[in-house]
Length: 242
Image (cartoon, rainbow, N blue to C red):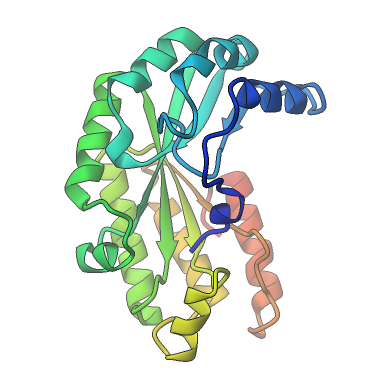
């Protein structure tokens, strides 16, 4: 339901490759205070990034005030704190909650339940590691109305368990299977108005930062789509409902 799977490898990369990629990128990117290291998988999956790579990685990123990595909730343990201590700055771990609707979460085959998410949040907070969460707007088997309601419930759930930042991602049909579900009427991409309403409502809570994922968003299917997209961009930037 997101696009990261397109770059996921089926085998572990050669030793030293991760550090080389980070160094290559940092040499070409402008100076910044904050860094995201998203690896199309889980940062603390040892088959994806071996702990033997950590000394080189932390050496490269030490000048940043904070670093964000993505990770599966079941892979959040003491190793997260070990990496943070090696780095020496603020570490934020991004967790894919996706939805707090347990039945839908099981259908998504993410191989986790809500208790796994709660345990991950507790572990990260115990280690003074910040939490970011991803929420999917209108996953399969969800009506437009239910999609909005469940996204808001999921945001509330994430904030209650320690998330300080949440990203709302409109569910996409990009991997073949989703298109099959769409043909069977079991999935429909959410309306841009639903994304707007979810962002506006959740920002009004003033419980943390919330962002709408506007990657490749289509604003042509609604008569007010252009103004809604402009409003979404403004809310992302100002963190105030409009």
